[in-house]
Amino acid sequence: MKRWGLLSLLLVVLLVFLTACNDASDDTTTKNNEENDANETETTENVEQSPSGKLVIYTGRDEGLVQDVIAKFNERYPDIQVEYMTMGAQQILERTRGEKANPQGDFWWGGTQAAMMVAANEDLLESWEPSFVEAIDPLHRDRENRWIGEMLLPEVIMINRDVLTPEEGPQDWDELLDPKWQDDILIRGVLASGTMRTIYSSMIYRQGPDTPEKGYEWLAQLDKNTKEYTQDPNALYLKLTRQEGSISLWNLQDILLKKHTTDYPFDYIYPASGAPILVDAVGVIKNAKNVENAKLFVEFLFDKEMMTELSHDYYQIPTRTDIDLAAMPDWYQALELKTFDIDWQVMADKEAEWMEYWDTNIKGKGDSY
Image 1 (tube, rainbow, N blue to C red):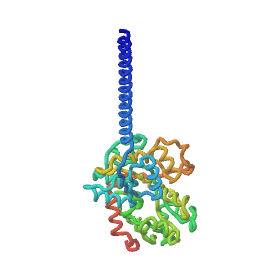
Image 2: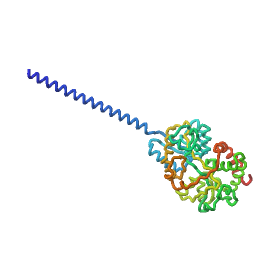
Image 3: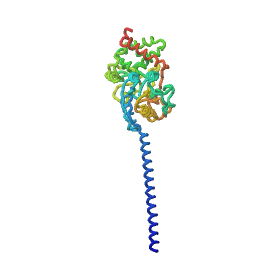
Image 4: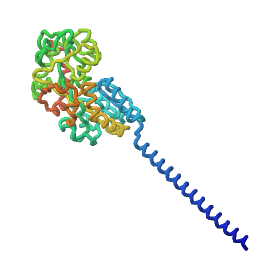
């Protein structure tokens, strides 16, 4: 009897031990399953937080700047493959218009206010609300946020400082018509350039938008003094450097970039009566294949830290109104912007008509106009 009692006791102990092992195994399995579920959830979240795919950019901006910003963007979003094509703002408008039924680009980076207004009116740009939109003056963006001004571009008189000092060159727009500057003026081809179309349209506007004939006469006088219309900005820079001419009309940012970061001998004169200050804008192309990636790029580009950095490195005048002035470069803090009083909607509405007339009736015919 004692033997059976001992065996019974041993069996009870064994059963308790086996039950405990099974419970521990179940706990371990449950724990492992929970950890696996957590890892799968984390992996899913990481996928969601790591955008991928493509982004196609049409841009009129300086290529060095474009490459620099894209490299920084890819540091944050390494799985987005960015492609870009450089062309004039007017060329981008025409390309986007031609591709409306099947957009090939996603983001328009660098277009004049007038060109962007035309694109918005033709339903070529996406309407959306960026996170920073309240920091942009309503004058510098579309009311439906189809385009948003990234920076301000004063249009000024450009000179070769090896030939002229800022004190020796023409001090205002009307002085460009003085016969002493005949064959000293080089102009970047106007129709393909948003910058030049804005400058020329501004010269018509300042004479009176309701009487463009006065502006046409002014441009005819300028044509008399113009030695050549160059094919693109690079040809303009090269010919100015070779002293084939000593004066041009161009935007302040590009002049400062060339002056401070290259060997080009350029400087500028801010016209005494003021300058047309162009809003250089961006827009997400409507029905683009990669709309969300384009929006990510906009948010990245307009980040306050990025805008401040671009002011230091690329002489940009940002449109954001909430950037700390103390963080901006010395050249910006010393800048006094004097502008024309321009109705930009009138400019947008009239630009194509005015430029077509100039190209057909005035270009190269100033002597006989």
